[in-house]
Amino acid sequence: MTDSPAVRIPLDPREQPILDKLLAIRTNLELLKQDKSTYVKSQDVIDLYNQVIEQVVILNELRTNKRHEQNRVDTVLDDCFQLISLSFLTIGKNHEAPAVYSAISTMKRLLDHLKEAAFFSPKDLESISGRLQEYRDYCERGKDSYSPHLLTLLEARIDVCQSILSELELSLSHLTPELRPKYEKLVSILRSLSACNTRSKFPTAEVNDFQEQLKELQASLAPYGIAAYDSSGTVEEQIAEMAERLKISTDHPTPAPEAKNVIETLLQRCLLWVEIIKKKQGRIDERFQDTYDKLLDIRNKLEKLSLTQAWSLRETDLYSYQRQLDRIDEARVDGNFLDSNGVPADLHAQRTLLYLLRKSYALIYHLIISSEPVSEALLPIYNQLTTLRRCLIEVKKSGGVSSPRELYPYSMKLNSIDNMRKDGKFMIGDDIPDGQGSITQLLEECFELAYDLRNEAEENESNDSDEQDTKDPSIAI
Image (cartoon, rainbow, N blue to C red; front, side):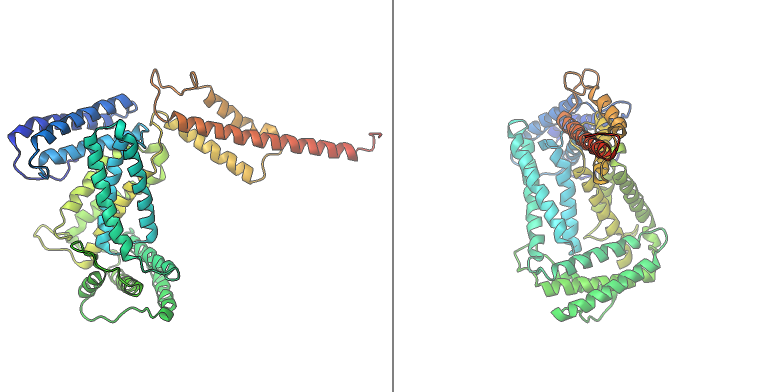
């Protein structure tokens, strides 16, 4: 069991029964996710969700006068909600309010990291903004179905995310249409350089290419009066100076930084970073080798999952990755990674570890929002239909088929899937798993594509036959 970061605050004796019950629920959720011999059933998840809500109601009654207290009960409760949320994704209830919890928690981590890093793409913010609105809609639709205690919690977390997002949007509000593509290119280069820095073999040629692109960008920015500014001092001091120039205040509103300041600072960071990583050649400070290896392993496993998601991912598997990352993230002191003696990491190690941490959270977020609204029990059918649709679309794009006979393999597969339905439903035993609408729609789309291709092939055959008859001299008119 990968436990959440511990909060060491004395526990009210009256809350001990709640903690015991939540620990038992968490264990049951863990067992549910670990059992790969069968699929996760909707009723099992809903029963455990109801048990968690019962404990929330009791806890709120005890904390009438201490709403903001945080102790071990809260960390275990968060574990339960995370597992419930991921379980809702696993059973195909993606658009239900409880499914929002895990996505919002990961989004909050990402927004905090974007703010800390002080560089991000407008496209990053646009994507998050759209998702936030979707999650508000899910909560609004769930008001008649789910506990107000859960909905209040979710709406508060959505509001926190919206507040951070608004600050980040303000910081880029002065980017003009002409400068925005150049800023986005700098963001892309900085991220690519960080990715190169974590390769098993340092890609010198690729890094040199990015360095040349930076020089070209620097030249193209000169007509706008933008250039890497002169700064004295060590590399660390220069980075600190740049962070201060782009610092987003959390205490009071500040005017949005001018586009010139934003782009100059980012350009300077890119130029400094490329020099640092070329000097280090991918070698991390040995004091932080263990943390680096752990983060690298998590990042690599998540990237592999993102490639095979449709066939191999059970969303609840993401929980262990989330908790490992949370432990590493929350072990930082004032944003710094510390060694066993409490000494902060040097700039290269600090930035490298932060990149891996943020990249891993981003991969988890991507896997969550990419989850299909179909129960894992029906995923094999859904994936087969998705592949069939892709094949039929490619056949249509390439000019169709020359004969209806070429469509027989597709038609046979579609008919075999269609015949699996009982009374119009895809059933597993006596259960009717979630995602029926998505699969039915996909099946109908495949049948429609096959029907269109067959008609086109028959029409072409008919036209060819008519032309042949006209050319045949033995036919008298």
